[in-house]
Length: 156
Length: 156
DNA sequence: TGATATTAAGATAAACGCATCCTTTGTAGC
DNA sequence: GCTACAAAGGATGCGTTTATCTTAATATCA
Image (cartoon, rainbow over all chains, first blue to last red; front, side, top):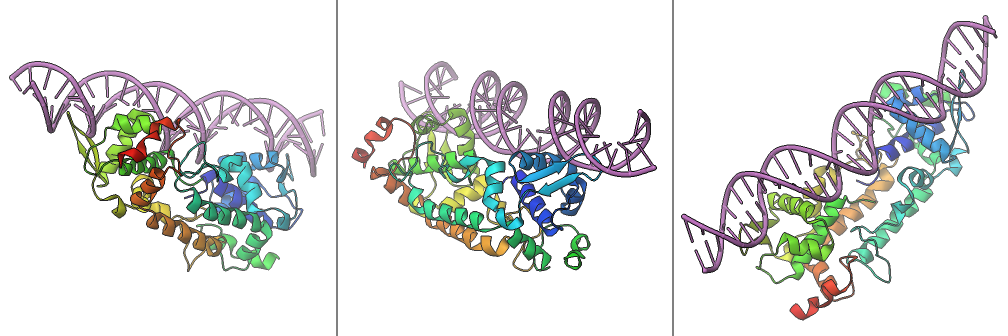
C-alpha cells in the first residue's frame, strides 16, 4: 500500500539485527534465512543501507553487517528516506508536480493531515522499540515457521 | 507515496469528467489534453474503468466516455480498488503475508489507525466533492497552464 | 603464504508499470 | 451502404524494481 518491497526488506532486516546482541556482526545469509528473503537481493539492500550510513560491513571470515548506531537512535524515517528517496514525504497524492498549501490539488487539504500522521509515526518508531516488540514474542517479523524466532527471548 | 501513476490518472480523469455536463460523453483525447496525460495510455486506464463498471463507453461519431452514476455516488475507494486491486486496503505495511490483529507484525498496532484514516478518507471523498472543489477555482487538477481550465466555471 | 569464508561490485535476467503504435471493431451521420 | 470517427484489442518498447549470477576484494586462520 505504501512501502516498496525493498523498503520492507530493509526495515525487516534492521529490526532483526536490532534483536541480535549489540556489536556482533550478522551475516547476510543469516538475516535472509530468518526473514525468508532472497539472500542475493537482500545483500544489495544491505549494501545500500551501508552507503546510507546505517550499517557497517566487514568482508571475509568473521565478516558481516553491523548496526552503526544504537537501535534507539535509528528511526524508520531514516530507513525509508534511504530506500524510497526524499520525494517520499513530499509528493502530491494525485501526482501533480505543483501542489502546495498555496496551490493545492483537490485532495491536498484532506490528505496533508494523514501524511503528517505517517511522517510522525515513521519518525517516532525506532529499531529498539520494534525489536523489543518482536523479542517480547507478541509480534511477528516473518511469515516463516515460528521456530526460526522461537528461542529469541532466551538470548537476551 | 501511495498511489500508482495509473490510479492518479484514473482519479484525475474521473474528477475531470465530473466537472463536465452530466450525460454528455467525453472524448479520451479531450480528457488527456486537459490533464496533460498520454492519450494512448489514458485510453487503457479508461477501458479498465469501464470494465470496473464506473464508466460507459460509446464508439464512433459522438462517442466517448460517460460516468455510469452520479458523481456523488462514486468514491475514490471504488476507483482505487479497481486500479490497485483489493490488496490495497489489506496488505501488511511490512509486507508480511500473515499479519492481523491476532498475529500482528511489530508495526500493526500503530499502523492500523492510520490505515483506517486513509480508508475513511477514500470512502468519503466523492467525485462531486472533488469536482466542485476544482470548479470553485481554488483547487488545481493539473500542472498545465491554467488557461485549459480557465473557463470551467462559466460552463456550469 | 595459501586456503577459506564472507561481503562488494558489476553484469545479467525476469517481471512489472508505463507508454506507444497499429489494426480491428463498432457506431453515427450522410 | 459509405465514410468518418472513436473506442477496443493486441503487440511492442522502455525503464524501474526485483532478483540472480559471477567475479573481485578482503579478512581470518592454519
